[in-house]
Length: 105
Image (cartoon, rainbow, N blue to C red; front, side):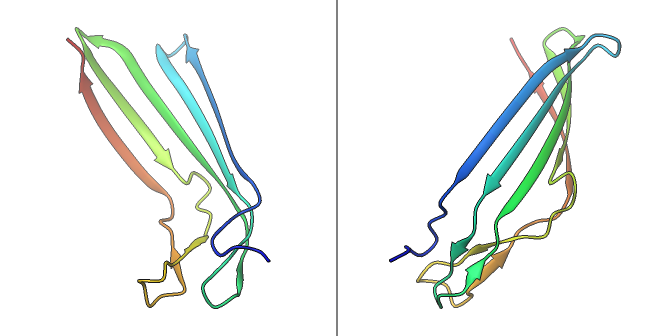
């Protein structure tokens, strides 16, 4: 019998390359999860989510600035709840933007 919250396939693909014309590093990630069963036995459909990140690694000294967009295409999907939750499924965040700064020394 199929297990609860157990997808048949999970895939993560990452790509990163310099973008010399702009002096940036470009990163792309694709995450895929196939359909899974919830606690009540209903099925949640599979999903594919794209993430994008731009970073400037040579700005000032060891300072790196990055801009990331999570769930680039604003995919609506949910993850099954656990036995300790009263919810059957949890809707996941839509598109979000993240700005980060790191100092390397």
